[in-house]
Image 1 (spheres, rainbow, N blue to C red):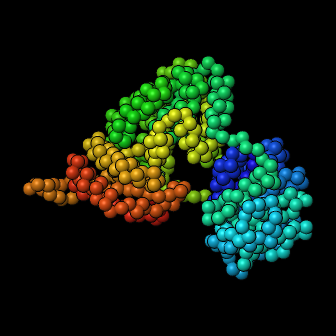
Image 2 (cartoon, protein in one colour):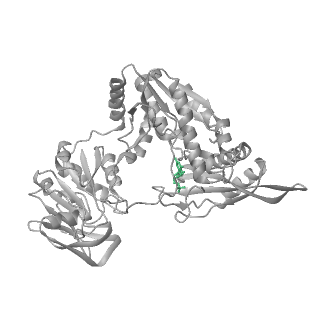
Image 3 (tube, rainbow, N blue to C red):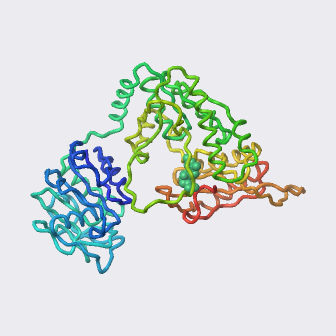
Length: 508
Ligand code: XMP
């Protein structure tokens, strides 16, 4: 496959996803990985990612020059191009005019393999402060923009580089240029598909597990569900899924999970009703982080108790996916904890299990493909993410059963209407929040004094930043009418128009 060396670019996972979309396996490895270990992977090609550093800065990420001596095709992107130039004796300097955003690329070598089927002029995405000012000996310019050398090559050494980012969609023919590298130069083979992945993973699971027992914490979310379906395909009833109903789940969630997975997939699922335990522990607690800790701790306890009842369980399966595994090169330094994330299915520390993580190599969109391939219905595979602490952090202030029931009804209406209006898949995450605020209203001739709820809908790519969804007024009106008329306990509804930052997606 293709190895992507990570120099700290926010786009490095995107490069890997683009290559995989071509049907070629790609993995992301930190730039300081030992060269021999990189070579041991027998990569067909190596891509050096961009990064925020300057090659002349003290401690700037660099490379063992040995990497260039194996005749493996190398493509440097942005910082990768500057580093290649620097290490081969050329010069890099701060540009007078920093290029940021769209730029027009003009080809100097129209017949170059990298530019097969690419027009002479095309738009590319630039994002750099430094650029190449003096070419390294034996390197040739193959494309430029108004203000920069945009692409270079050294055919004898099999080294190529772009100053721009072909991996982002703003680069009009970027995907084709990457393809030209992957197939035209690196001569990679197409053998990465989800059908193959399922087949080989099922085989591996069978071999590894033998006749032993496996347990898995099923949350109903995409990752744990797809992991369960895959393992179920391999070993059937040797897998026991533990589904904990915390009392903080969405409306009919337990019912739905049992219907889809226990019934249709004949999965072995133990559904534990722990509502009372959770609500008792949460009584009187209002601080968000304290609520998270209580819910996380209680979850592990319930899970442990159930796990101990399963005789001969030696494996603990988890829905860990590739972005959780990539050892990312941090360039921002230690970050403060905004929210301590707790995930349902988190590893119980005092249990001695072997881990089984069949999705470790997959990106989220690949996990969804596997899910579909295995026959999980779209409405389960395309679900928005749901936080581990569930409604516990969507009921602001103290959590009670009364409030959880009110919130469940309102949330179900919002989601149902989003689906009906074909909007559910156009937003990234939508839900209702219940505030500990009561206000005066009127119903018939009666005065009411009831809770205020908030509709929240966010659009985001990575959940690190987000904008609020511009839902149509007519749609909001419909949702408002339904919630205020149908849900007892809510007499006022608002729409959250905060972006992240400075707000966050959840309210706690
Ligand atoms: P925020 O609110 O930080 O949320 O903008 C970003 C994403 O993370 C989810 N989230 C959580 N997920 N445990 C989780 O498993 C948590 O404690 C938690 N808090 C936030 C949130 O739903 C959104 O998708």
